[in-house]
Length: 131
Length: 508
Image 1 (cartoon, rainbow over the protein chains, first blue to last red):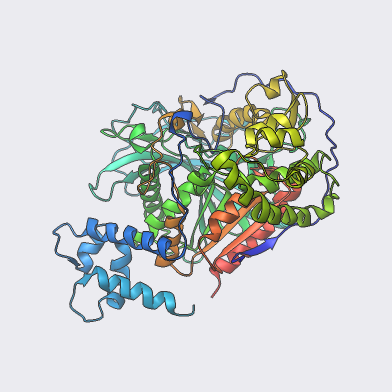
Image 2 (cartoon, each protein chain N blue to C red):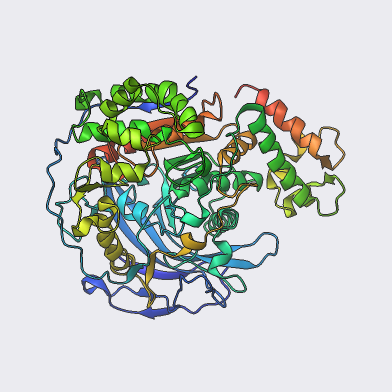
């Protein structure tokens, strides 16, 4: 399954530098006004920090569960009073501008406050709609 | 060129100094920022002013003359929870004169590292000026000349190049220190706060917003896209230049009992073909088809053969080993000795006595020569020119002068907090998935180089495929290295792909 559109694998524009080894240029003199403290190694991880987590990369329902958990954490972080519900102002001041921006659509019952389930319902309904 | 210094409207405190003179006998004022910026882990500014140098220029792109304004200076990112300035970001913005803020896109560019300034994208890719590197040759005159960039993206979007905290002239504001932001989450949150500040300070909140990150900058982009969408800031498009999206699955940055190098195999194939070591060696025009063939082999044969190898050291049948050797130019003995063949071994093992490049494997150097001394001839060749060019460019062309030293690469990577989302090393596909959930109209373009051993394209394809069927994701492949844009032919192709991508992302 290749879900991904390929824009282009570009056609030929061959640079026929065989692999004759070219003479190395001398490094430039000390840079003026800028400094590289270390050679650029991007991406790179220091050896002591390199141990990969032993887990299977998520996809499908497991990936969607991670997405929901992220949103849940953002909702809970904005819900400083632990009321389980947010007004538009609370969402805005709590860093959940997304909820504030879509507040009318999320607050279907016109209660002036929304719970996490309301946000979920909104996202599910919108995600299902053809764009 | 005329130049002027200006303070942004919300500025309360000014420490602006003027001096006259500057390049070309101009009498235009030049902005002197007297602050000494530090890239050290424990450094922070007592306070920060939002000041910039503003200059006017023009270039020709696609036959049209573009008049633009360059703004080089600082804005303070404000922590939304505390309301306090947390870091002073250095940026250079290029804005097209006379454009409508409501419809004109604005794109934020940053390199990665972590700990890298954005000078590579700034002076190498789609800005209005670029360094002539001669990539993939190492015969270009050095230091590289700086020229007008006929492939600048300025015809399509305003461009903001921003340096991470502790790089360039960006520094934390006390009580924070630079190292406060040396972690996946803290860094991305600060970038969010900078972007929010830039959009507000420059009246661009209505402008379509794009992110353009490279390498670790793609890791940052995924986290940042989700943070911005969560905060209610809508993004139109994200360009992932040479991606690293899941460190845990990548044998080039992570170790473990079973981290496969499968994602590198087609890259090895393309590089073997470049050095004419594959059997049979595919013709250059057939590279895309050949690469697809190696991808299929990697997925259907090599990856399954790694499981018994990880479990018990068991090697596959000789035919599989022979096929690997034919596809890559690495001999059968080397495959038998090191069946999960890693990119560092490939760099030193493909051509005897020679080290091939990590960023651009087409660049090579004899062992023992200066270009081979730092482990990547392609990086070693270009680094002095980029390093020396940026300070001179900022002062002589953009009128921004400072007693400080522009930090191209800080030590941040040594102490970076890579933890994210419960894992010790970042997997940011869930962040990208979350951004798509919050904004189903989001578009992502993944740009990849066939000869890039730092962020191989099959690895990126595999990571992005976790998003499932997603018409918002496109991939493009170029005959180039990690910095695909350094190659003249690849840069022209990528520019036209970017124009098409922006049209798609801005479309109805």
